[in-house]
Image (cartoon, rainbow, N blue to C red; front, side):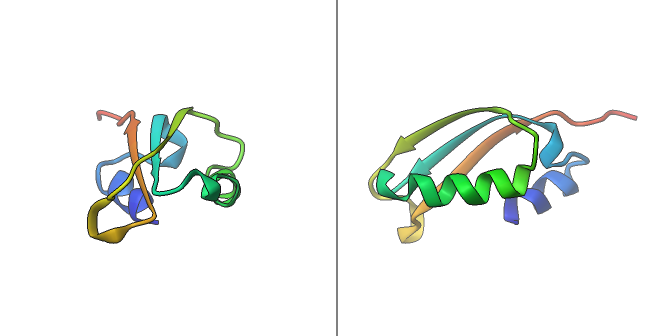
Length: 73
């Protein structure tokens, strides 16, 4: 939801994501994250990398970085 809000504020949206990088504190959460990720993005399938990373900020279990296009009017 946070990423959706940031994209919206920038004049973009989830459907404009080109690539995401998902950082997980433990890859055992991959299946659960994948289900939510697919539900949020629907049929949109941007390029994606998933990496296990220890010590995410503030003890987070997941962090997602994305590159998205923005309409210029």
